[in-house]
Length: 261
Ligand code: COA
Image (cartoon, protein in one colour):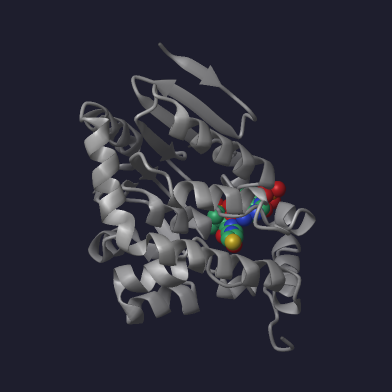
């Protein structure tokens, strides 16, 4: 059976043949993610977790853009004030999701566009993918336990380059450091993610769940703890002068001036 919902249209949720596909669909705003979109993603993951008809989740964007990260204007209007805010619900949901998650990433993957991939099991990227975690450039600090998972994955020197300088890195670098599984032409990435998801659907779910749980077990406690600590700092820093300057500069399409912060 095939069901298609669109709530709201910026996130498309489609369930077919055991796969729930979540498509970021706000292309005119570069798939930047609002609080409402985080809420939809968090709800979809929760329902996928409990729905026996869903064995695997696929997260994808558009051939030209995965996600520009948090919607900056929306973040200013609706800052995540508590741990129950939609962005933190989404992060807790994806980081503890028990079933396999496959991601397809093309074009820019900024901020949470990159850090959410640390919680996916298989990641396929278009050769146009560009990953970045520019939290420092926005007067913020890492989220999604990336302050722990990125150094663990890449080693400290490369993590420092990615998180302190916040510069984008290519699909080749992402493959080399182990953030992604394979690079393909952008037009093929979503189809590859679906093929790999269908391979997982054919496997015994009980074995997938137990294997994923065992692989993640060593990090699970520290990831939850670090995410809460990062979330508290992130929420506080959003209100401080450095972030105000960075976000104001983005809205006014000018370079930020951090000389006073
Ligand atoms: N929040 C809100 N709006 C965003 C956005 C974001 N994170 N990223 C892009 N947009 C909007 C732009 O304001 C623009 O809107 P407009 O057409 O009304 O002016 C539209 O999306 C297109 O963006 P633009 O920057 O012109 O596209 P681009 O192709 O030149 O660049 C990016 C794409 C993703 C590289 C660039 O948009 C970018 O760096 N965005 C900010 C990323 C960021 O700092 N995210 C926060 C992480 S916490």
